Image (cartoon, rainbow, N blue to C red):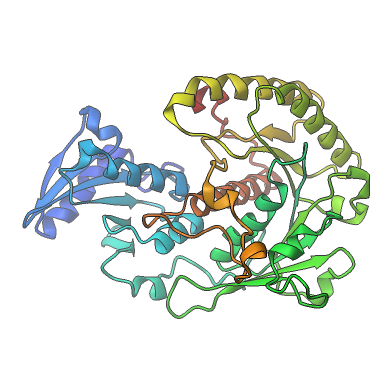
Length: 419
């Protein structure tokens, strides 16, 4: 029944039948939705003792990612889905680390994640069974392996103009990796030294170390640390446990030390969708790319949309602005293939008041924290930065595949699809 490269089953329908049989063994009545338009979001409906459950199956070789989990979770919250008491998302390949981190921090009460095995469904997340967090064997301790499993991953965050959220992106991307269990170093290359201000409690202190402890969201695990250093303080030999270094770069490109520029695996350039600034932003982004490439031949250079307005009334305007910005990137790709505009379907940072008011502790004297606090049980920034972290980890996987001779690439969806 299985075929290489296509999940464990010949097709999704075969997996759906297999899961239905397992549910029937557990005492559920099942209804297959093959050929039904509802099957786009769920493959089965099962019921037992007053519970009505939507079941979606994923028959992929790759692990089910955070975007797929969020989409199914949003489906369950639609008014048209109010007949369901909960939903099960069943995967043949398990779930990515950011996806599991997302559900284990937000703890949705109407969602279960499970991996289909020949012997039954092994639950990865069950809101009624918190002990799963401690015994899940899918995840290695992050102290044992970074995204590259070997070397340190260096990420540089640059600016195309003032006010695009460079420092906010650098800090919260570090937070997303910390939530997954990585200790992270933030190197502050910006002369303004805003990172230090945002990670210390006493703003008058000259010697307080800028840092943040991110508690673990799973029982039996310790949390992770984010430590802010300047360029002179960072020494790889002194931090052998560190696998991720994120640099908040100077807006004056020539002021960034060449030794960091040469090490970057990824260079992120956040930008906003401004009608008056698109043309200017595009030119500045290209100049930034060219400067980086003059010293670093291997880095993936990525433009990230920050403060993205995902309100439905902005769909047409977003599409037009994205297409205008994409033209600049496509033009530059003729001379440099290792750059791209990240499709907002894959990763973006949505406009959010938590991020807007991040750093308020500088004013009110409270302890520093990230803008991952929840509103009505959810955190938009946390979800977005976990998805960005996953995007970068997937780029790492793609690069490793290329090293082993796999030249097949999965084409990215066009910006048009983001509408």
